[in-house]
Length: 138
Image 1 (tube, rainbow, N blue to C red):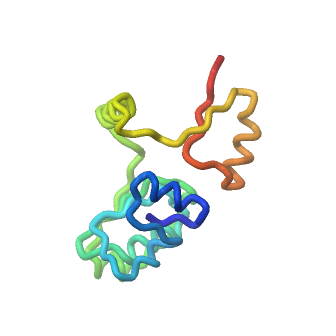
Image 2: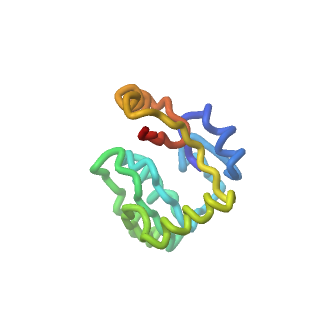
Image 3: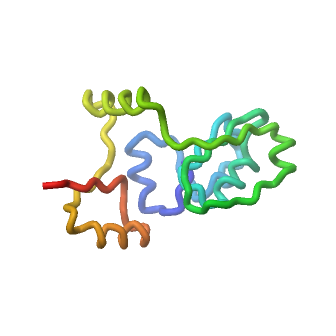
């Protein structure tokens, strides 16, 4: 897993990450078959295309930036498949809910009230949120 916020690394490992480094490019000794870019900050996508293994797949999910520049040489030489994803199918979502129901998946969440949304947005912008924020309607 690549994550620039080092304070999250222990949680990532606790949740099952085998290794965590600041950038996907820091995995010099690994050729990945699949890289899922949940950040989508342009450089993260370009870096993934640079390091993907031959014939690998880079899946762009995050929209941190809505534009990126890809090195055409890396795309061609790595014979990379770059594709976008806006989430999953309804069956995928049902599968996630089932995993959560059975306890096989326990996402890290912080519940907030509707009145706390403005402060929560500030926390998101500051990168001060671990896991997902969940708005609790009462």
